[in-house]
Image 1 (spheres, rainbow, N blue to C red):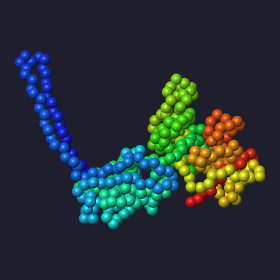
Image 2 (image 1 turned 90 degrees about the vertical axis):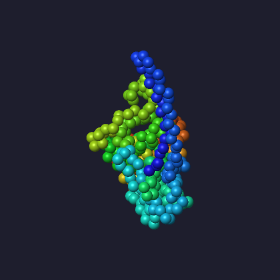
Image 3 (image 1 turned 30 degrees about the vertical axis):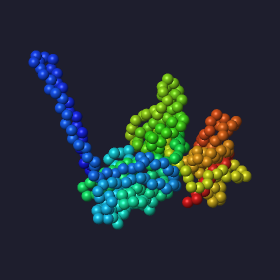
Image 4 (image 1 turned 120 degrees about the horizontal axis):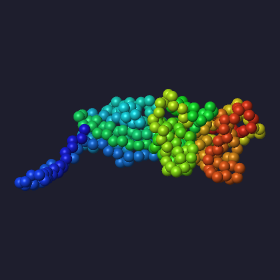
Length: 352
């Protein structure tokens, strides 16, 4: 709770053009001294960038008369994660004296740095995709309290996704599950916006994490909002999460493992592909993993291969004839009949 005083300038100058004998009242100036708050919280950075699997410190320090003598005063430090729903916050970590508590999937991964007596910085180990977002550091000492916000951004990639049933077949809850099944999470608007700034152009509308539906256009054209419109993020608004049916934009980041195309003497059906990866002490790769390998490792292979969702894709980082000649991309062949013996397989071996 900050104590605030203001410097106030009040000027009175009233003119009535209908008054015959009007003498203007001189300006009055009231001076009030400004004083410093006796307790406050601040962060040296408002945005921290990390990646999945990394370790990060969210900075936070508190200052005041009591800050240097925390042993004799009960200082309560509380970290929460903010969501798109202003009424909902996710508890992360609380500490007061010798009492400490972490919550949910943060358990065992978070603690206070405490490099100095007034250091309330939060250390998060083994970053996961769900850690992305805004965090609030709140420090309470008696009747005084203050807070500051830090944004944790992740290096990653946004990719559009639709299920084997085809375009526009996911409600919001199914969209969340679809991303998780592909080693990803549903993307936020900020993540989609950054992808659009990097050149993402996709004409199918998809769910985002706040329950809105959008799609990014860099090359305006007739079926995608109109040829004469400006590039941008097309907005369908916030729709019924249970009844609305769209695609989804997913977000994934670095992985701790090996993504590879399995060299096999013959082409494989889907079931044979799954088994071939298992025989190689691996799992059939997921869509998020092929996008991450393409984005962060520059993975390039012109062989179409099965993935875990039953789709067939291949990653091209160096465009060339017969292999995505016009652009670097993860090429999508489709969802063929799983009995087709026409494709290879991409596998993933985790190092965790």
